[in-house]
Length: 346
Image (tube, rainbow, N blue to C red; front, side, top):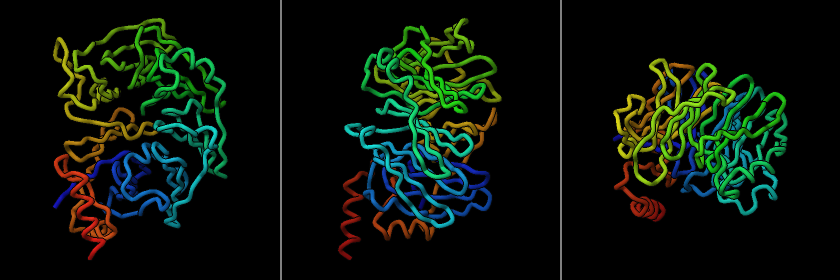
């Protein structure tokens, strides 16, 4: 029997793929060449059933770094030792914050983390796990965000000329980070929008998806702005991430059934997607209806199938530990707890 794994983060290194589950504390591994699936275990100091502990993951030199979202610390997983360890974050930075980080990328041995409710860029040096912060821009961002204590970033980043570009979720601007010099600056877009979700770079053009579904294209200096199209959709915000592929610009949305326009838009990819990785090497999206990670490397699209057979010994081991995998929306938490209680009593 196949069950859907809902994934919150993914890391790929050649033929090796690690992924973390959304509703359960579990790190899994798949060899894309041999199809081997392995259970790496759970973060030992976190609850086994937890939602969105980590929304990012980076591979650096035989180690996996789990980026905390609902969790309160960075987690290092040593692949050779098969061991989890904790990297503490300054309590003054995270105190009172609901969610910590979501966007991240790696340059050389440094992991850059971008806050959801944390208005600082965290830089982790994987050589010694030392942490430092880039915060020269934080005073200016308070003036630009219309909800100063709200969400700063979603997930997607774009990269251009040794710089990472992050769209602000609660402001009409972009955060541009020189990841070599470790300096940051804010750029106001002047699109008269309250925030953005998706971003990509094509040549010298920046493409942006606003929270209201509008798609813009601008040159890198923000002198030539173009409205590409505008959606007519439900009032709620839908995450829309934008990518340049061999077939042109494509928009991956969290629910294409709720996205419509005055004219048919070829760029909308049908389905329900979430961005689970956006870094210098690739962008990756999780598709709920096909149980698959869609990975865009350069302009090329690759699909990674991640269904798991419940008769597989790895999944049997997870079951024996009281951890079960989400099958579909109709199979809820009460059934999970009932099963776990039954196992505990046997």
